[in-house]
Structures are given as structure tokens and as C-alpha cells.
Length: 85
Image (cartoon, rainbow, N blue to C red; front, side, top):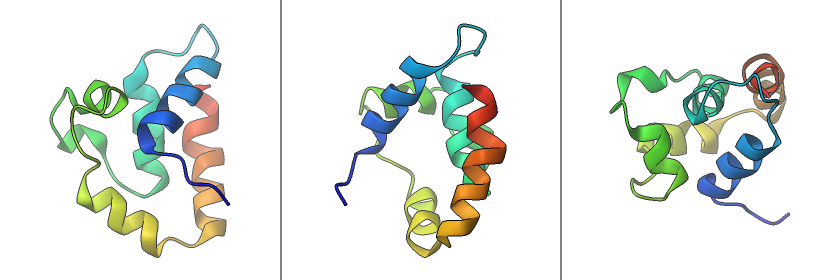
């Protein structure tokens, strides 16, 4: 399986969203929520900075993704990310 960087994933999801979707922050919020993280506990500009690769991916997200169960991630995406796109 090929790996995509977080910036690419965010961009692809953001571009495929419905017009009613809020902002890049809602997409990032859904990604973070998939791993039981709250993006609002970080810098308020983190969403746009992740999309532009200005900031690195937070270590908490990396750690959570490494140990996550694939079934839990799939459920988290279904519950937290899909509704925003």
C-alpha cells in the first residue's frame, strides 16, 4: 500500500467535499476525531498549516495512528469525517 502524506489526504478530502462543508478546519477536525483527538487543543491555525505543510503533524496524531486498530479507524472515519464531506 502506498502512503500519502497528511497534507495530500487533507487536500483530497477538502476538494471532494460538498459545497456546504465549512472549512479545512472541519476536515482536519474529522481526521483528528477519528483518533480521539481534539484539534481545538492545538494552535487555531493548525488546520491550514497542516494543509500547506507549514507545521509538522502533531506527535499525538502520529502516535495514535501507529497504534490504532484499523476497524476503529474505519468507524471513526465513518462517524467523524464522512459527514463533513
